[in-house]
Length: 411
Image (tube, rainbow, N blue to C red):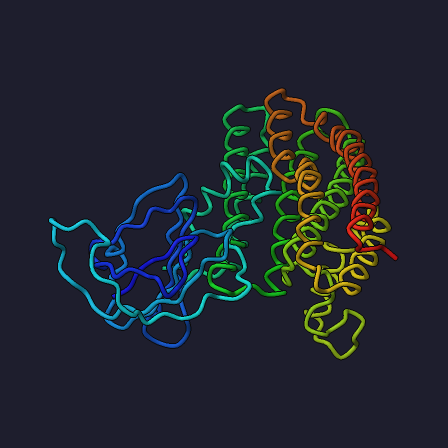
């Protein structure tokens, strides 16, 4: 028999519950994982938002099968549990109602990687719309053993189709179709990361592939719009679109770096660390050519293109590293204060996320003047980028001044 704990319950205080009758109310998100026949550990997920009640009997667990239970994705309550037995449902009982007894259960998973992105810095449309939709697809993908990379490529194909639709943006039907396909791409773009974390299949290759798919999607849309606009406005439009594309790449890379910096410094997530992975540098002449290409793209997407904020970011890393090394016993407090100070600012960085570009393109298409979107990209978003970098610099100085008053001095 097994029980399912929530926050505030220790593993040793689990109640015995009937597997066919147990109901779990996921206050935000929940998941379970189970071992299937054959090698490997495959994960099945229950992901609910808004809260919903689910019977665990729907999983069809067999005797002695193990599964992983997580109360939600944000508090670290994750347990490995084994089914020891099963009892028939008694409608006269309210579960859990049986006496407590020892359960076969593993230790809580250490340093779990959240399935969804960090909640406190999540962009509002992702948090309330895109990622909940993605979360409902992830269990299906996991059961079908679809890989995260396959999800990324499928999303890219949807983005390419959106480009074909926007080529005929002056027809309202095609403009709406293009927008719907872009929303579908956003959903798949959210699902690939959730699936990778859920199945513990994050990889360097997948991270770079995700960046490639994102850029190919917008390349397809921008190219289609440029060709369509050139027939009305002339060939100078190509220069406008190229300039907008360069600005887009720089802004997106800078935003992504700031988001990963928050995950690394605020939550100590190694997957967000910016160092060169796996020990193969892009200049290694003995590395396979594909690996060297991916190393170059990794450095481009998550380093070189974020050059506008490079000085501020580099200075912050140096000072933060020194502060943590000087007083390691205060590391948890320093990270907590970092989250309190920087979460609101990183949320503002989400103005440079892909969601608002997709919306801007659609509005431009509805107005039958998508060229205004490209001007917005060049002037509007670039201005926002400059303001955010300035705010990041000011916030960094204020943050380390605060640490000084807490006896954690900066170098």
